[in-house]
Amino acid sequence: MSELSGLPFLKGHGTENDFVILPDPDGRLELGAAQVAALCDRRAGIGGDGVLRVVRAAADPTAVAMAEAAEWFMDYRNSDGSIAEMCGNGVRVFARYLVHAGLAKPGAFAVATRAGVRKVRIAEDAADGTPGEVTVDMGVAKLPGPDGIEVAVGGRRWPATNVNMGNPHAVAFVADLAHAGDLFDAPAVSPAGAYPEGVNVEFVVDRGPRHVAMRVHERGSGETRSCGTGTCAVAVATARRDGIDPAVTGEAVSYTVDVPGGRIVLEEFPDGRVEMTGPAVIVAEGTIV
Ligand SMILES: N[C@@H](CCC[C@H](N)C(=O)O)C(=O)O
Image (tube, rainbow, N blue to C red):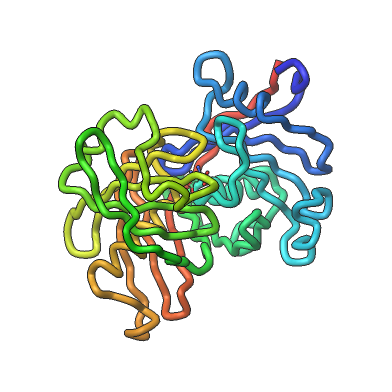
């Protein structure tokens, strides 16, 4: 990581989906895949499921077209160094960082991402100092099909729903989360070619009315303790399984999704938008040596 020597960093997480935050306001960093992987290495690096580079939208060619709508661009990378379109927990942590660093005022503001501009709201901290939760308008979930997608682990197979939240997800309802196995390797997803860019796979069980729990194997990061876009995908897939479509009923629907690292609440509106609410905290800051 010698090229990054002397740079400030922070560490944060949202429901234990953890990130190395690299402030780079003027877009001076040339961040390669190997550097990202080294930063995310849990033994030889800082450790994280991904990296959030914080850059002014106007200073990054990917985001410059969004600069009028959002001052800051979340440049998200998976822990293997690959680039993803969106990270739901990441955008909450990114928003928390902007306020922590005095770069945004608490309340409502916009963040540019590769999936488009996302509006965030940060609630007031509780009287005991617990940081207020962060709500993000995650945009419209797309269910592009096709039917017949399957996820397999060990000897078990499940039908899966394709949900796109800016990034791709395959959501499988299972009888027991343990049936997903150790998830050291990516689950097999068929048919071949259903997800040419790779896929995040969620395994879901019911917990109660409009309440589910999930595990996830993330493209580019392996099994993580949470995936914000995954919880959105799961909420929408579960609503459709339950015969609920806010576009048809004209009423918003809310689902609670438990993840190994905590709990996220999702609300889907008649216009198809999904709002995600969950925690986001900064836990450390320092300098790369
Ligand atoms: N943890 C994230 C998703 C990060 C991107 C994902 N691994 C992908 O490659 O699409 C989240 O909270 O949404």
